[in-house]
Image 1 (cartoon, rainbow, N blue to C red):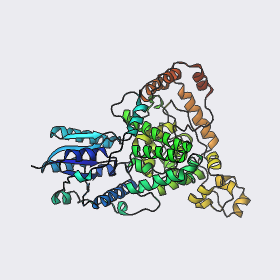
Image 2 (cartoon, rainbow, N blue to C red):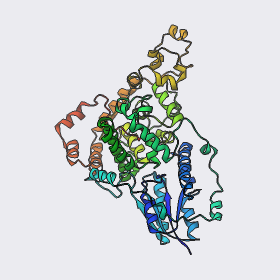
Image 3 (cartoon, rainbow, N blue to C red):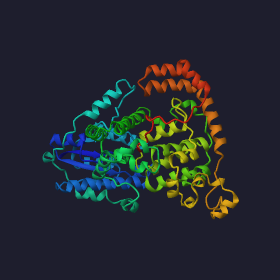
Image 4 (cartoon, rainbow, N blue to C red):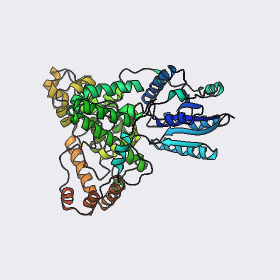
Length: 522
């Protein structure tokens, strides 16, 4: 029986800076390059056709690169465990090489099943770290130093001359191609970024060379951010780029351009990207539960009609609706606008974060479970250790889209109105509405809630709850596990006077801490 190795591609759809591929080639055995479109994952509630279209495009790019070397890459519509078991009956699988994955509960369960399968059949499964995430980590001591060390490791070239391919037998190939990909996955979508390693480098290089000049100035503006932000987040999510590649390319660009400000801000987001994924890796129950269990008693009711109205972009608040329609159509939205959508759902509509978490996961082309769930909880105020942020969508529109360019683009019902009314169409008098041929409630919905009342109610409830003993006890545990700053933990929960005064004073003005500003969207 022939002995082979397998490189199992997951969220690492590239051919460079790929340690599993390098290790497989170094062993010198025939090696199968494999990706599985797993039906169970494709049917998950946080999955969307846009994700698999991006994967399909990424694989097409890999195949195009390998074709130049007369090499094959196999992508099958099947559960990975089924493919491995079928192969095991034909060949001796020595080692499966892959990257570690910090995914949702479904892929975590899949990985545990694969581990049991490998153990039962004497197969070695060798996993390599992904991003800056450190597996089996129970505190953050020295985490940052290890992150920088990993990002600074040399990127070694792939020795394709030594690669020995294993070609999947025709019968197996045919067997696992019985289920075709959905036609929407095969269709191109011009409004969304294309997948692939080469497309990723096009976006990254254009950012480092030119677009980064207005990066931090425009990072919060919904329209300008579409150009000034890097837009590499989906390429990191699906592994067309490694964080190490981006980190080192950015360091080179800083040295060449001297733009330490914009590129320094951008580099910090690479750090925080891995930081949030690390939080999820350490405590993945936050996919379903409040990280701070002290908040389990609030937001217990769910209004399906309200959530649907929010999801369809029909709330009557122009910037909210523009953002939702934009992300549904393009898969992209900058961080502040994402945070505002979550804030509106959980604070102004007072819905549990779980009610909208899958909807936005399906819309974000760069959906990264490790960031998505912790950010959803942070913006809904149920972590306990972060500042409560209740966004006013009218204020945000006036500040971040003052001329209404973004709103007019995505809410065409308002495009013909004067700028002040683009932000607050409900303030038109009957005469003004008639003059502009605008019918409130028909041309565009009336606001579904009173912002002032809902803001006050959410603020009072959350700030009162933050002082509850159960919340403070959970804060101590969260800070111990997810930060390296023992002093901060002690000050926050053991009675530091300044901290206690702030808690007693209640909410502060809305602040966006740049360390938190990352949904992988920047």
